[in-house]
Image 1 (cartoon, rainbow, N blue to C red):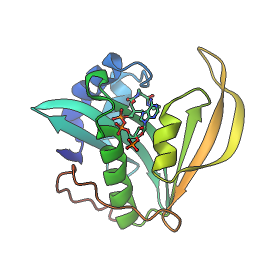
Image 2: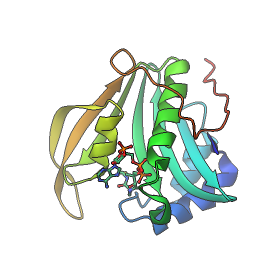
Image 3: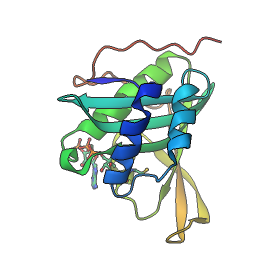
Image 4: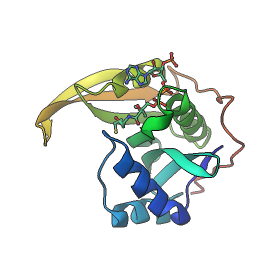
Length: 165
Ligand SMILES: CC(C)(COP(=O)(O)OP(=O)(O)OC[C@H]1O[C@@H](n2cnc3c(N)ncnc32)[C@H](O)[C@@H]1OP(=O)(O)O)[C@@H](O)C(=O)NCCC(=O)NCCS
């Protein structure tokens, strides 16, 4: 099931990130901040399978734009469509709540680019030496509702989402 995360998910998201090479190494305080400001400046979706959190997608939201901060699927569950389902669900609900464009930055070497392109993200720039450990350029990508109308993924659960004002 895919649903919006809440503060109760803080520890399981941090644990998932630690277990997933390539996921961001944010502090527990950062996860807590994201999840307690959900529905104002952040939106985080999680995937649950057999009562375990196996994936998440975290966005900052500044209507009418949003930024994908991170997406991660536990290594044991990668390559099974969970990343695609998470992002498709998130984009669907962001678009339904009035978001017109989603941005992201990704390491030039990251295989996640393949997933982003399949969902309709296109490159629109590059930031030299943006990342450290190791130093690497960032590719900037964006997804626009007008170019890539989202659909609901059959794997996703039923969720409601409303940013309000
Ligand atoms: C990137 C990530 C979230 C993808 O999740 P996933 O569940 O493995 O991806 P999916 O199985 O949903 O794949 C969706 C599509 O993207 C493509 N894709 C996903 N990962 C890929 C990879 N490493 N190389 C090439 N293509 C890939 C798949 O081919 C698939 O295409 P298809 O649906 O046409 O078959 C996952 O690999 C991950 O957590 N990686 C580590 C963290 C990370 O790098 N996050 C991104 C930067 S923060």
